[in-house]
Image (cartoon, rainbow, N blue to C red; front, side):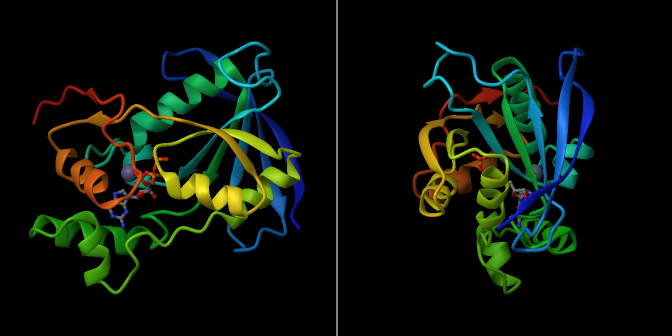
Length: 215
Ligand SMILES: Nc1nc2c(ncn2[C@@H]2O[C@H](COP(=O)(O)OP(=O)(O)OP(=O)(O)O)[C@@H](O)[C@H]2O)c(=O)[nH]1
Ligand SMILES: [Zn+2]
C-alpha cells in the first residue's frame, strides 16, 4: 500500500498563458520504486458537469522527454499534455505523471528505437527488434497513487483501452473513458497510424486535429 509522502502548492502555467494553482503530490511505497507524481488541479469535479458528479477526471500521462519538454513532433505527447492540463484546470482532477519514458523502456532505448524507425520499422517492431515488449507499461503504481489520494472511481482521459482495463483490474473503477484529441503532424502521421492499426481498442482517429508544421 502506498501513502502520500509530501504535498506542495505548485502554480502551473497553462497552454493559454493562464496560471492555475495545483498541488503536487509525492508518494511512499510505490510498487516500482519510481518517482511518479500527481498534480491535483482545479476545485474538484464540477457537479452537474459532463460526468457523474464526484468522479474526478484523471489523466495517466507517460513521461516523454522528447515530446513533453523538447517539443518533438515525432509523437503527440506534448499537445496531449497541454490538453490535459487545460481540461483538468477547468474541470478539476488529477494528472498522474508516470515515469514510463518510451512506453516503459527508457529514454536511451527509445532513442535507439527511433533510429530503427528511421530505417523503416514501425514503433512497435522497433521495440521488438531491440528485445523489448511493444508496450511494457504496468499501471499498478498509478492505481496505488489513486488509492493513496482516496480516489476509487475515475473518468479516465485516454484513447488507450489497456489503461482502462488495467485500472479496472487493479480496483480503480473507470466509469467513463473520455477520448483525447489526437494531434496529427507530417512527422507523427506514421507513428499514429501504427498505433491505430496495432493497438486493439485504440481510438486514435477520434477527434483528430491536424497541427500545423513547417518542415
Ligand atoms: N518505445 C517507444 N516509445 C514511444 C515512441 N513514441 C512515443 N513513445 C512513448 O510512448 C508514451 C506515450 O504513449 P502513447 O502511445 O503516445 O499514448 P498512450 O499513453 O498509450 O495513450 P493515450 O492515453 O491515449 O495518450 C511515452 O512514454 C512516450 O515516450 C516510440 O516510437 N517508441
Ligand atoms: Zn511522446
